[in-house]
Length: 268
Image 1 (cartoon, rainbow, N blue to C red):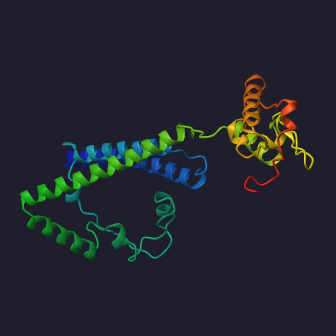
Image 2 (spheres, rainbow, N blue to C red):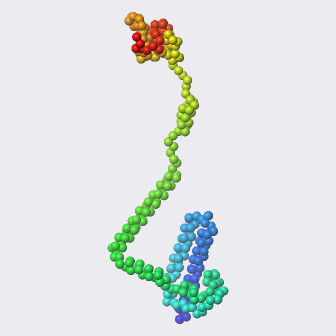
Image 3 (cartoon, one colour):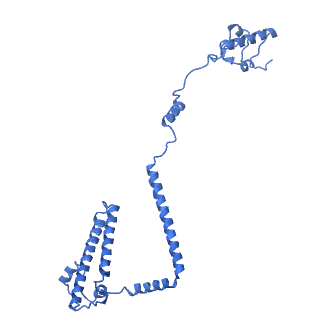
């Protein structure tokens, strides 16, 4: 009997030690969430979760150890219930339980969940037992497939967002060319004032100007030439020679034989 009591006390001490470590880790993590949330990083949160998970696994190993007695077989009976404030109880519970009365005993010494929660748990267990092995396996495979597709979509979105952030936007225009084009259209910047030598200006009435005769035969078709056919032939040959030698200029002798281009070509 004494051996079992010593073993129970050692198991309780080990269990209390593990629970104290877990409580300290939880308190530190809660303090970070409440007071250091602006400086808290995701890797630090993951480290805190990993620490808590490791401590919970260690606590489960202690409970499942072969030398640990079954605590479920132990019965806790409240010997004294008092509505007065208990300072010793306040110190042991760190101020969470000021009195040990009939109001708090059912909550702190409860070994089973609430009746409503227990009823829901029984209902879930009954529903799970009705499903056959094949149907359960199909549902598991369907759920795994949905989770895999969802994870694949999430990873694809993350890769596209990262690649989009690293890749610069490709420029589809040249700012220098755009500015030069706007300056040319708005202010005429970069445009030359060159004019052909044959378009110096209109002539006086009755005397043809150089601007009335265009280079090529198209300009000659708009001019009416008077005189004999032989004279016309000589004038045309002179125009062709002048065009071959100096394009855009006419000999001075031909000007006296050509009427002004201001006359309508069909006027009789």
